[in-house]
Image (cartoon, rainbow, N blue to C red; front, side, top):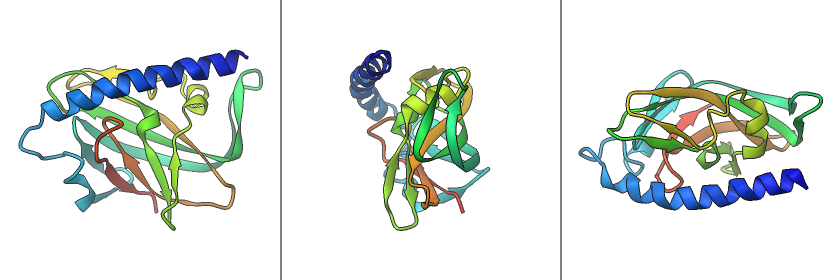
Length: 174
């Protein structure tokens, strides 16, 4: 019951905040560089900076095959396997921007899309830095974005977004 209530509150917050962040995202563009529709032309690699809108992302590592996140008392078990993606997010804009780990996507080599698991990310992050975190200009946060994928699947790339409505930027994992 408590988990369901928490997830319902999270979903409501995401919807409310997502609508506002999409409107703010389009109002502050500097010459179109780094916007989602321009970003897919270049695919970054792990360790390289990649920009989408007001954020510069650097994927530090990706670890798959994890069966559970959290502690023995409080945690979440994967339906298949968890892929834990450690990412650094820097605000390169001129105003605060909210980073939302659940806006990120992962893809298998065959193009199958996987969404981030916000509930598991709460257990994977001690400071909850990948969940609805306002990042002021020039500041950065690091955290783990979690994907729950089938055991026999290997992720090929990530699509990272500065908001739920941005075009995103690709980061190759292989």
